[in-house]
Length: 292
Image 1: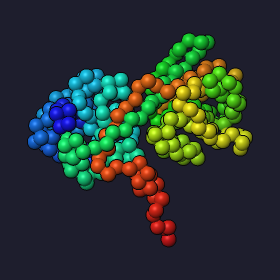
Image 2: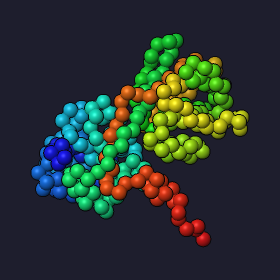
Image 3: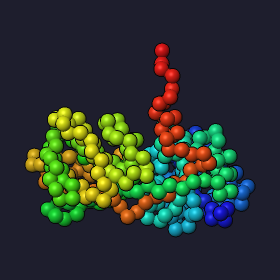
């Protein structure tokens, strides 16, 4: 198992002094373990490469056996989308805030990485969404999302209207600030703040979560991950479509946003003792004492 991680890529949150120190410690440790190291080019430009080979995401995807991501969930989301087509497993060291996906604590980083190199870890698959925007039947934009696709009103100060279909069946015309289409991974992100359901990563489902709907009967619903979801912007209503909160596309009235489960997935590696439910309990303070 140890030989599977001979070449390791390091990806860090940009412009973060905290990440710079952790990256240096990790470089020194891994070089002591006789590993070959690649530092992602944006990370190298921001905090330095510490004498390691600088590589872009394509090179990391083709050459690395493992990618270690230092940062928060946003850093992990970006790395995961960029590496999804290559199948490189990822492990996250939390240098952000909540850290739903970066589950190695910063103070236990070296011990957890040492255990991982010894083969002491669990693996978990997370699926992505294929999203495309169609205009007059022609694709004008396409990308991947690991957390969610969000159709919202953009810069305008009023609600928008959209027709929602699932597998070609008309569901309703939604009048709202927008709609979140979330994976189980994304169910603890924006969708959670909009009162959407938390989906365990093993649940093969996609959540539709309306944003501030005009009709209170428009409630969140969980669909099969085999569903094809279509959202058509009604006349007079343009919208902005966000993908994992990191990329966006300005759509026009009449455009159709189509979302399906992608054939691509990512593999997350977790340290010994990892539990999704324990992580939720900690991050969401389910067992915390009431504040006085």
